[in-house]
Image 1 (tube, rainbow, N blue to C red):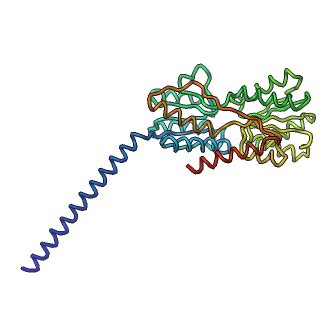
Image 2: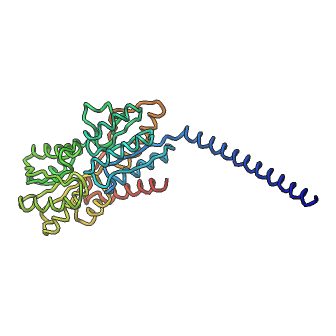
Image 3: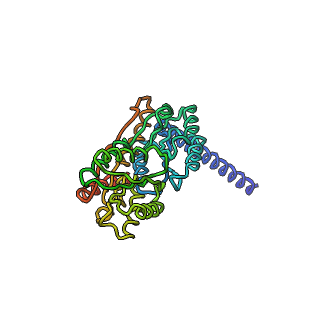
Length: 337
């Protein structure tokens, strides 16, 4: 009898313990749920989808988006295909993020036509879209809230003005991104129109798909076909570094000046080392930060300008040390947040 009483008492104690434990877990779950709900009211998950993540330039935009998320309290994720030419892969990423319920999209489109159906879906679902680095054509700009980046044509003109100021009229070759890509069209055309007015001759314009390895081959072919070319202008730094590799391979680094576009860390190092001649430096970290800030404004019911342009700087051996020091400070700030 005594044993039965003790066993029953122990069962009651265990049952009470379980009930109390369950109640505490439920209270904790409720507290956590309320906290998560409160946090959710302050945070909207947004997706950054870049042309790729295969170069310093895109990683700097990625750092800017992350930095902007930390500043605003907005949860951010950043992804991109392995190559800028993987248009299908990028479109699939946009579709995936729409399905996953992203609250906003930051997009650097690889192909401004191919992404239109996906952006139509964003519009239908009231997902605000901020374009970065490359804009849609004017007829489709109702599919995005704003464009943030460089005025590509004006930046190309800046490159042209640099050439005119530093060289006598000569032959210039252009190595560019994907054929038909509007941003690279503008970068090339701005330079071309500026230098041709001053007697320079642009002898060829060939695509290397923004990839360093392809630019090596393209530059080799250009030098073989046009041995008297004096300047090779590449519409991004990855291609410029590849072009310089080809120039160095033919031991023509003293007679051919290579110019890039972006201001990526590898390009700055090459300029410091006396290799790459110059680069048109954009402000990719600033672009990424401003993209998140624009979405925050939209989430809060505000409005943003249709175009938000960031500044550019020509960087060569004369100012590379100062520019690189400033860039490193920005990168440290992004990494520490």
